[in-house]
Length: 463
Image (tube, rainbow, N blue to C red; front, side, top):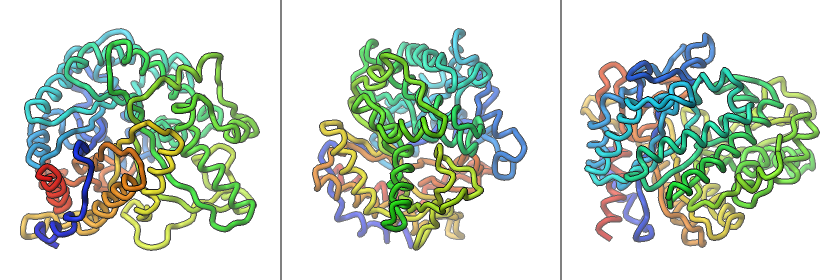
């Protein structure tokens, strides 16, 4: 497939006039420069340097050198016609110990990045936390310690004081489900714990941090505040009561446990019961849920795939990401999969967006991540032909327009990811970027998917 082949696919996509189109990244995945300008270590520095935790021992020490190459990367965004860029700030670059002393050199990097974006006509969408907790706070208990939520509020105040005059759109957390459950229950992510009580405590304290941070930002005058959650629709393998309950249990912890307290002020009753029965009750204190439900201006929705689950009748022998779900098995997807092993299910995306709209009526939605990994390489002609990603992009953009037609209030879409980068525990083995990065030379090459996406944006601008 050539870049011109992608254009006819985009012609039928029609979005609301003020729809925001962008791409997203995360600090630890792209910045590198882990020991530059006083940056302190994060839990991902520690985790990735622990033998056996990541693919081939890969770390984010160098990543794709965005800290040094941000001007080049912003120029790429402008060339593609992106109207917005979603990025995260490294907490330990700004507050090396997680609290107290502010590192102005770290803040200066983000000041320069924001100024470069604004100068290129790209609107900055700032995510405060994308999984990289300062190691100094982890040493004090991390997200299992209630005090970390208060340190997050302090961090929010520092960031808004430095950038609030130029950044309009703020998201507190990215995917707290991953921080809490993959980080503390399955151990797949930093800090690599496998403890149900720790996972439950981390869940609540992350949400509390969101609420406290939102209050600080609102008091500072912020007017566009969001929370970004990752959703995976769960379907039972059969209609047996055991399988239906397995899907309920997984849906509860993957989706509803994070969405409902933020938008309704209450945890789902069935999830509260599940966690208590597993000996890992949520550590809710008086007034917490009111804080967590601080009003939002928009909700970030991250979607990649759907899951089919069943109850095996006995422990699977695998470490589950969900508390009290030892007997639940996630079935292999039917049909094509990405190199991550994830199935492709665009219709489920439409259903998800409409469901969220029914749970949180009146709350605008922004697709803050959506994308796919494929075995991309630079071809002899110098281009990167990624027909699978082009197809995935088109199918999922179509799913968004279908949801809008059904009444979902979706205001924007951010492709994941702008650049090939460090894919957490999977290292550099997985390529999600619409821009290819040669990890030896750091040369950037827009893929066919980037050109297809740029065509969507061009057609939208021209009406």
